[in-house]
Length: 257
Image (cartoon, rainbow, N blue to C red; front, side, top):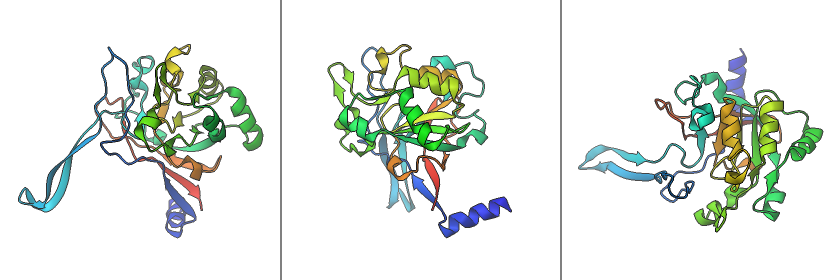
């Protein structure tokens, strides 16, 4: 009965589905690592056949990319702190965890004023004073409107001292991991950490702390401006890659119509 009501609500439009996913294409920005670190391959697509002599009745393509390309899921084993979790790969995570509530903390004005803006616990406390405590098991999504930067160079925003991209402070990640029972952390930027996160203590805290606690990440999200502060449910199932550290995915949000 409950699932019948759910299906009827989707069919009637009283539950709307919002796509939070960037379109994958050769120009999709990929995180840039300085030497000597190995780079990820960009997205590539090559045609196998297109209703022609190579295959008269079908069209299909070969794809190439790194696991963390475009809108993607970070599994715990992506980071050294999560390497020992037996259920920490995209193929071993309990699928029950791929459907979870989400909250959206809007700091788009702050990010527009400061491209290196850091979300602090104080921003979360203000949000909670308006919307209530972050629910157990929720995704926390940081809305910056960064996804509106459609030029790949502006999206990556590399400077002489590294990327200038908003993200969480180390204190914020500590707070979410240790004081709120979150499922994971999601952002609109190319990676879940701030652009200058390499200089934090610990370095890259959204990776180091979240994955060390067997929690997840979502990066390169879009359309967060279409979600309410609370009440959305995310579907975040990555590809089932053997020993996969993550994968591109289609992130769908269910919201009341």
